[in-house]
Image (spheres, rainbow, N blue to C red):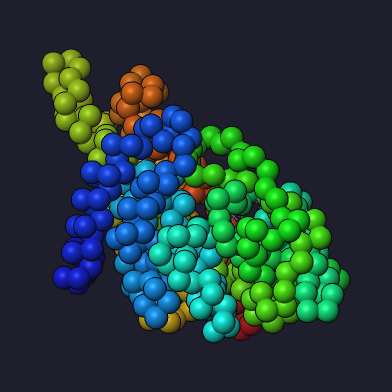
Length: 383
Ligand SMILES: Cc1cc2nc3c(=O)[nH]c(=O)nc-3n(C[C@H](O)[C@H](O)[C@H](O)COP(=O)(O)OP(=O)(O)OC[C@H]3O[C@@H](n4cnc5c(N)ncnc54)[C@H](O)[C@@H]3O)c2cc1C
């Protein structure tokens, strides 16, 4: 099914095996303790998965967007938190450097990222600018061969552990979106500090931190793209990133169905397995159909990316549908588990908490609907 090639099926089998043996047994502990899973990431790096989309000449695996999508999906099926660390690293940090970086920037930053020696992060959001990213207040002022950056960034995945951060700041606030510029920052740059990781509803083990910039001097050679191109770069990164979030949501939804199916087949009430009650069986069927549709949409978005075609509609649609599927399926999985679904001895309460954020980050569901409807309207209004 899904038209996967022999090579893609082999990768999927290897990912499933790794996730089952190396990640799944640790997932509940990571969730409970919020411990950052360095050891798992190290093993994933050895297998080439931290650099899955990075071209071979920069030390990566040079794989397709579809291979990346499957990597996030299978990882998320075992631990959504691990998949989030990977997704932020790969699409939000590696991809913009691969795509918009100068040769010198690629040579300097991609090999350690691809080998997983350094983690990547992407910093767009601020306390007063989330969905309205163009309203950002962080400023970058040119001073000789440097820019001097001041401001506060919010909600940065990998923010306290990343060595390389793709960060957006305004070089001309009057120009709003057209005045935003992208930079590559290094953790060691003077004046760059991070807050303590935020305490979250789910995704425990993936750290989310605030960044504070106080007179951070960033060389002009670390500007990513031209001055004023940052907003376009940020939005293109999110288009690719949304394939990752759709894949993550898909993995969470599949894990919820796996758990619900197993439980429904064995839990007996009124003298028979609860799966034999139509009300429960139909929940399982509804979960399966939405997961199937989510996978078709997510893999299609990845294939659109691989074909080099315009990605916005496909990526937003997949992210929107798959994230709502993850919330639907994890909620139904809790329901099927009855009271046991609400306690921590079963994985479904974690899945329920982890699923919710997929409807929020990299553009909320409302913003995805905005993107999709705008594109629809463009086709009738002709611009
Ligand atoms: C765990 C976690 C990890 C994150 N990781 C990163 C990261 O690595 N890098 C990064 O830059 N950011 C990251 N974020 C930030 C995330 O992308 C934002 O939280 C998200 O984009 C929403 O922004 P906001 O929280 O400011 O909400 P707001 O933009 O204030 O939205 C609040 C509500 O208003 C709605 N709304 C806003 N505008 C509109 C509109 N025009 N039409 C209809 N409804 C609207 C929203 O849909 C939402 O329901 C992360 C957030 C979390 C919680």
